Image (cartoon, rainbow, N blue to C red; front, top):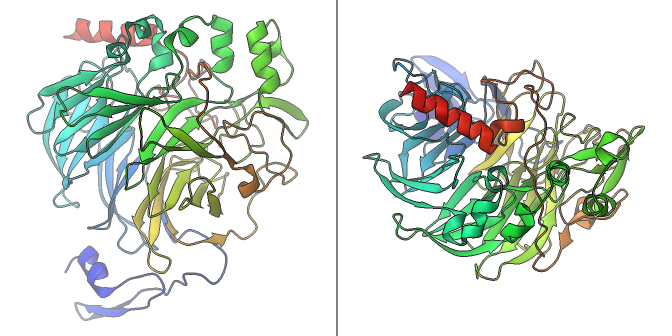
Length: 539
C-alpha cells in the first residue's frame, strides 16, 4: 500500500497517534497537539525555486510552480510533507525549450486531474511561451499531455471546465485570453479597450493584466493600476464587462508625467495584484503591492505639486533612524453582489517592515485564499496570517506566524478546514541562502512564541491602502479600516527599479527579479516589444 493511501486511511491526523505494520515493520506516527502550546508550523519541505502553490484536498497533494519546472508534494501527513515528483526543465527536448520562468500552476477547478503549468511569467528573450497540460491522475507520475504555445508570456492563469484563462500581456491590448485546454484552440479575448478605446492611450505598464480568478460564470481580473474588472464569461468566446472595482478613468493614468508615474509606482495605495472570491462569489479580496520611499532625498525633490500632495497624504513611519513615506499595502475586502456598484467593506493592513523600500524587507500583500469564513494570506517576509472574515466589515486577525530570516511567503491556500484536523499550506520562495519550499500550518487560532519584531522597537504601523495618515502603534483589529465605495485614485503602480536582484538581495532567476512583473522594463511596452521582435526573428 502506498504511503499516501496508508496515511489517508490510517488517520495520520493532527492530534492522533497511530501504529501500523508494513511488511512486518512497525511505523509509529508522532502525536501532534492541536491547541496547547505556541502556534507554529506542522512541518516544511525544501523545494528549490518554489513560487505559487495549489492544493488538491481530495488526494492531499500540493502542486508547486518552481521557476524552472513544477513539483508535487504529499501533504497527507502535514507534519511530514514528502516530495512525490520534481520536474525540471519541461519541454527541454524542443529546439526552443525548455519552458522557463514558471511562476504559476493551476488545477482545473472542476477536474483536479488536469494541471496547467504556464510561463514564462515575464518576457524572456529566446524562450518559448505557453501552457503545458499535465495529467496528474497519478500525482507521483505526472504525464505531460500537450503544450499550447502562445505569442505572449503568461504570468498567471486560471482553469475551469476545460477552459484556461491566461494573462496575455502582449505589449498592446493586454487581453485576457480564453483557451480550450484539450485542443489548444483560442476561444476568445477581452481587453480594456473593448470597454473604452481611451484605454489605448494609457501606458502599457499601467494596465498590465496581472492575475485572474474565475467563480462560476464570472471572472475577476486584476489590471494593475486600472483596477479590478468583473467579466461575464458564461460564453468564454465572448467575455463582457459587468463592472469594475476601484478603477480610475483612463485619462487619470494617461495624463501623468514620468516623474509622477515613477513615484506612484512605489507608494500606496498600490497596484491591483491578486484577486479571489469566497465560495459565494460575492466577497472579493483585492491584494495590493506597494513600498516606501525615504522621507528625504532625491525621491522627494523636484516633485510636481500633485506628487507632493500624494507625499503629504501617504502613511509615514520611522524604522530605526530612517523616516519613510508610504509602505506596504494590504488586502481590500469588497462586496461585489452588484458588480456595477461594489462596496468596500474593510481593508486588512500589511505587517510593518524594518525597511519598507522596494530594495528592503518586503511585507506587502501577496497571494491568498478566502474559504470557510477565513482569509488565509501571505505577506512575503511578514509571514502568513489567518483572519476571521465571517463579518467582512470587521475582520479579526486570529493567527500570525513569521520567520523573516528564513521564509518569504508567496501564497497561502487551505487544504482542510477545521480546528482539530485542518491545515493550510504556504509556499516560501526563500530568503538569501535559505531555500524555498512549502510549509504546513494548523487551521486554528493561536499565538507564535517569541515572534520576531516587525519594527526594531516592536511596534507595528499599519500601511493599508486606506490608511493615508501617519499612524502610531495599533492592534490588527484597530488598524482594519472599514468604509464605503472608494474614489478612484488615479495611481500608477508599475514596479520600480532597474536591477537584477530580488528584494532580499539574492540574484534573480532567469533574469526575473520581482514576484509581480519584475523590475524596470519587464512589463513596459519596450520590454514586451523587444521580446516579440526576438520571437518573430526566431520563428
